[in-house]
Image 1 (cartoon, rainbow, N blue to C red):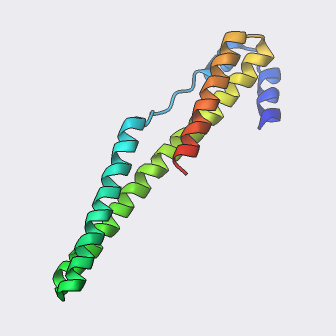
Image 2 (image 1 turned 180 degrees about the vertical axis):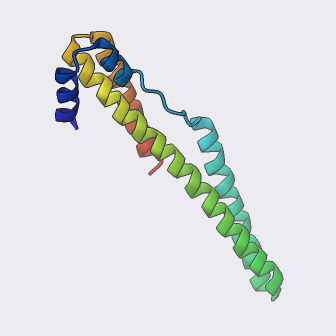
Amino acid sequence: SHSLLYAIALNQPSTSSLHFLTTATFRMVDQSEVQADKAKGSVKSTVGSVQQKAGELLGNDSQQAKGAAREAKGDAQHDTAEAKGYVQGAVDSVVGGAKNIIGGITGNNEQEAKGKAQQTSGDAQKSANS
């Protein structure tokens, strides 16, 4: 990917094309929302598991089935939130890497530093959501 960015930068000397590459915006996923959804999913899953076990102990098939369904919904909610967080981290990592490289090519130290920071933040998000 580095060579592609170098080729773009070298073959497109126009600052407007570099500006486009370095200011690309994506819908940001609110990480506090991701963490809240992960927590809600975990709680729902745990409650469902307890409900399922209680139904099993009491011989109540209906409660056992409802508990299993709640647990599955909670697991799905947690996993979906985790995937959103990971994808946003991946996007930040790639965009930050591009800004870092283009800042280095153009000699823009501020852009290079911001890109590196965004890339590092994205990598941390990916790790937190793997």
